[in-house]
Length: 294
Image (cartoon, rainbow, N blue to C red; front, side, top):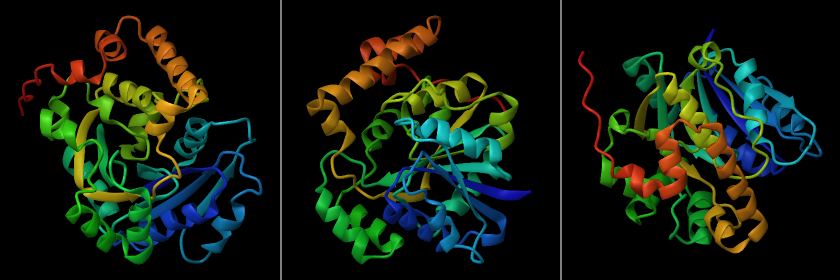
């Protein structure tokens, strides 16, 4: 059994996929201890050719599903079922890891145990930094150098405000799943499989599917951990999802549909209902839980 399975859902855009895979192969994690699963959400042409580019260099496998619209959760489920690693690391295509990122995920898993859920740190996903400036930094620097430049310029993790408010000890938060974004996190393979935790395949539009996955993990005893040193960079999309949420009525309608689905899925979960009704601000004001006795 390998130590680490990296699961990357992807749709078209082979250039960004190569960015992600190249950064993984440039990390300091032993290449023989990991596998990379390219979970193709119906790309045309398929991304099989990208996987074949790495033959002989790394264990890179390609999985494909028919294009039936936006189904990254279903693609990730292909990876969970096929994983041969002890720990699954989920990265979106276009997420570029720094040299120590994978090693830090593994270290956190060894420290916090078989129910750990590690939320990685991601530069480039804030709402204020200039997108083209970030692209230029990424294109002209190594991942480690780019992360350092972005840190110096204040292009920080988009959840940094929440961490400043509630602290870094996520397992003391009452609802840490509000911080689980699917672009960069890890969870033990056995923990997911033994508890039947998979991405809900209802979600066919953007929004909430990653939070739902976090709710499932948390309800089964997942210990949420912030991996500040598990650093990565998100290559900026042409348009931020947040901006589309404000300016694209169809995009927003899909998000609202997903929220309503969660409302019905968890009718007896007061924190989920509070989050959906009153927003994340209300949940973040809740008192922290006491530290568990050793």
